[in-house]
Length: 469
Image (tube, rainbow, N blue to C red; front, side, top):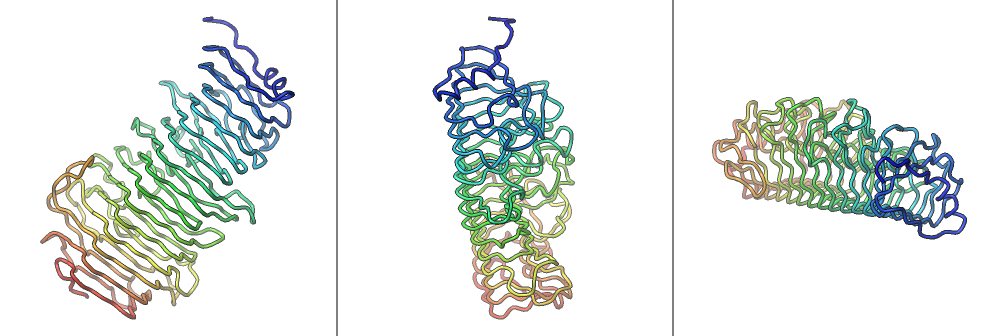
């Protein structure tokens, strides 16, 4: 009934908790829920919204104050415009085996989930903002430990209002608060739409964050997602697969992007090194309308801990030629940090079968692929480095992408090393890479003085032929 006073759902959930059962709300009904008045343990609750709206009016400040176990929330329209972090309705690692399915979160200011134990299902939900959203929206799913299914969701809201605070800089994932001995594992983040409404303010630093802090991380799949104006971070983990995602940078205001605009950022500063990480078959596009202050970079690898295997293969990287040449350089840039210990920092690095292009003419040409070590510390290196069958395109239009500049310009196809700070590469294989005639304004392959020591190398079938220097 229009104008009816919302019903208090708190007491109904408390009664249902005493004899766990399905609690079905009135179709089109409006309810309020004060989580601070729920029992300390809510178990086996099945809440079916049936088109009803539930406004959360208050929540505990401390994670774990109310623990949900084996609960399912289905077809509920949640809103929480008046509370925000640290008041989070679903918070704490003691939560386990809960599911949100076919729900809507409208103008939901706090985090949806802040820390969760094993067994979180978040599928086919919509996280949206009205035309007048709250001044600050977190609305993220943050720090689930494991057995995490995040599939088929839509997240479209302004996480950057006010700048730098919305969503805590992350929409989905973890950012290091877990204690040593815990493990983030078995994550499936797939077939989601992130910020693709592409409205002003719909941008943030990191869409998916793979970071375990003092804990460890393994068995993570980030697949077939559509991501606008944000990136994927990988800081720790083993058996990580970032595949078949379509990522786009469109915002003309560079201030809406908080950090590196690269699609994929491997910072590798965690308590443990990285095992095997695959970045394959993704499409990353910087529109020509993107601000020229956005860096023309698709992948930045910046490790200070050991990486066993990193494969960047079969991707399409189209960057804005009018953008700033990135520092550190490279459309794909690999830069071993000063904090990296002496020895082999990356056992195996493969950059192969990728397609590169520019969505606007290059104002200041830069390096296509850069691998260096700008550090005063000696004795840092890579075991196996393979650069194979990559292509730089001139002109044309790829499926679903903007037209490419017909005359791309780069200073080098491949640059190894940093002047005066030698990096060691045990096995270097550079084969089958192609650049259009006249696109390289410097040398195909550049190695600065005292910049690299290559123990074994193979150059074969590259066009135009490299002229090492």
